[in-house]
Length: 293
Image 1 (cartoon, rainbow, N blue to C red):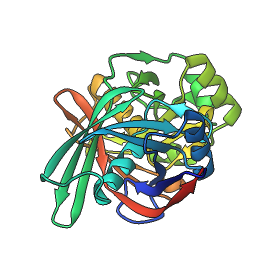
Image 2: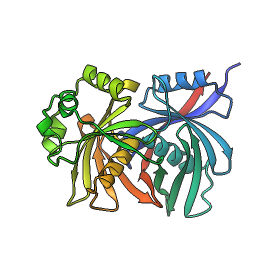
Image 3: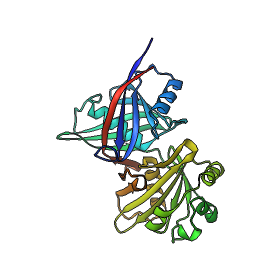
Image 4: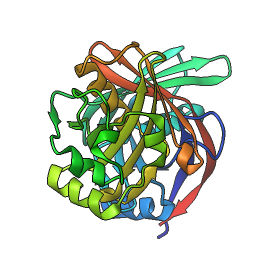
């Protein structure tokens, strides 16, 4: 017997269609198998698709899938998911500021929804605690994976690449200026070798302007089937944590720009509440339909 599931495609870190980072969102009704979830993600073919099951009022179980495999968390997909649930009325807008709980493979995390006069205004997604940061010493090895020289990495000797785990294990790589960031040429095979050596899933390259508190960034995750992402929540959170630990964070709120190189610009707001890092922004629902299994 055919089963039907409602699905959406929502662009995160933007307020208009066809920019930002798209996610698939499938409302599973609690009766979709893990194999079916993976196949649904492969069918929708976005960098991440969420499979949503409501557990109680304001409490959800969220599974995150790339077209290749399940991952513990995705910041942009979480934003897209809860924006969609709130905008479509699955979440009751009974207060101006509402806190939701999501259970994920990365743990129990909060999602804060702010409502305005015309619906959802802003959403903040809590990221897992980042308790460790391990510097990467071989600068030549890292630089060569992106067709740049070791001298093209951050000029400050303290700002070496580092491995950070916040649900997605990420190598955070600061570069010396915008020109390096936007002209680098990543090499898939070298990145895959680095990913295996350092047990990381993503590479987050960025340039941070301390005067403005704005970061330009690019993110690559070939190990899980994602070449270049247009808006990365977990990577932005890892970068924020990195800058804070290195005493280079000049503003309480960091604004990150991403996606220009793939024609889908995103704006990501990163902040800290009670010692936890949050990534936030707006989103735009662009598609909805029925999936038949």
